[in-house]
Length: 234
Ligand code: SAH
Image 1 (tube, rainbow, N blue to C red):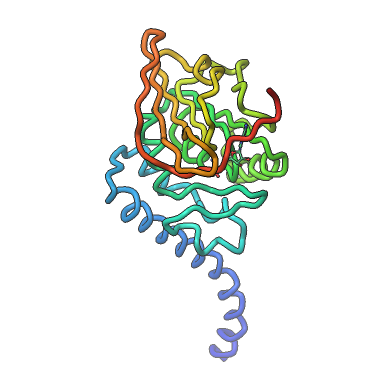
Image 2 (cartoon, helix red, strand yellow; image 1 turned 135 degrees about the vertical axis):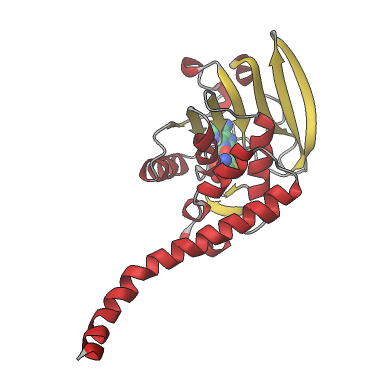
């Protein structure tokens, strides 16, 4: 009798426990990613490490890449665009020195992953994406995941988002040949901007801009490879 009842509820148990096991698996992959790819490579800010431990990166990639989401490389997200390698996301976020009370602007929403990482730390994230389909997909994804402190917009990010500036942090996740002046103008005092600068088909330099008492300080951080910054307006 007991065996029969058990056999009857077994399929129910299997169905209900399956998603749980899956999310546990992704959580352990995510913890390993943070420890081996990020903390072991020198990222120290606990806010950045905690944020990367929280954001479910596998939900920001196309379903066929879900099992690769926590690997040490970028992945395609459609429309010729990519979600950055986890370490690069952590590295750029660390140099922004994000803190709770801050307001951030991101150019190049893509999958929405970088925006979500920032949104775990700062008060509000404004993000702009030029590919309409990606802008719509990432806005929906961020909303469904409960990131209601991320405000998404479709358009060319070159002009920034002056209505909501100045920003404490600005991050550009596409490579520009020069730094768009409106983004520097919309940086708050003591604000920081991180942007890959260089030719689209080459290796680019990641540049950190700091604004202090209206003065601009420029520092080269490392070499990177990003998709190009696209322009629709001139
Ligand atoms: N931050 C993203 C990575 C996106 S790749 C993530 O976490 O997934 C860079 C993105 O910048 C692409 O989606 C590309 O369409 C977008 N992009 C390129 N030029 C842009 C521009 N001028 N304004 C806004 N977005 C732009």
